Amino acid sequence: MDTCVAESQAAIGIFGGTFDPIHFGHLRLAEELAESIVLRQVRFIPAGQPPHRRRPQTSATHRLAMVRLATADNPRFDVDDREIRRATPSWTVDTLESLRAELGDQQPLYLLLGADAFLGLPGWHRWQHLFDLTHIAIAHRPGYPQTQWQDAMTMGLREQFEQRWIRQPDHTSAAGQIVTCPITALDISATSIRDALTHGRSPRYLLPEQVRDYIHQHHLYQPEPA
Ligand code: ATP
Image (tube, rainbow, N blue to C red; front, side):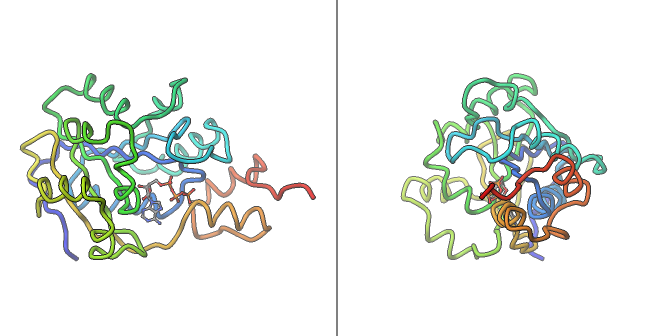
């Protein structure tokens, strides 16, 4: 596999998402990028009020609980609830500024994104400032082969990509580079899991059993009453 080789153990991955619910596509992305970039930790940061998309179907408390259950047995995974504690919209740039204030200017950070999320970057609040705060690691998701998603970049994003892309992360800088990493294609989405559940179909083997049990116990993603 074409991998991103690393030279330091110190880097931290930041993985935001709605996680409504968390599934194996998310977990494999985090695991594979942690291995290929050599991250000492991946912080899962569930969005409170995601500003770029419609409201999550499930409360922040349930989404956070499911992320905790799904990541508990991986010592490299950690869960950070700062976006959920915040009353204002979950702008990633604000989250990264608060992480920087805690971790200092020297700590290499990698914002982990699926290629589809990376393509949406120009719609994010103060997106160009993200590169002052973090590196970006792009995972090629199923349905987004490298040539296809690279062709879909807006001009502003392409400029940033061409200036910042490096073949291998060097971990000598704290922010500002873009790396691309192939990951195992798992064509799983939270949308398809919610859809299966609301139509009475099983989501088994698409997400961890603990998460499936939690969904059942709390009657989440139930069919709409007729
Ligand atoms: P939804 O279907 O509700 O839009 P989702 O499954 O795409 O949700 P998000 O929480 O929106 O999940 O995604 C968080 C991050 O995980 C994004 O960077 C997204 O690209 C990535 N991601 C989601 N599903 C996969 C997958 N199957 N493989 C790789 N990356 C994924």
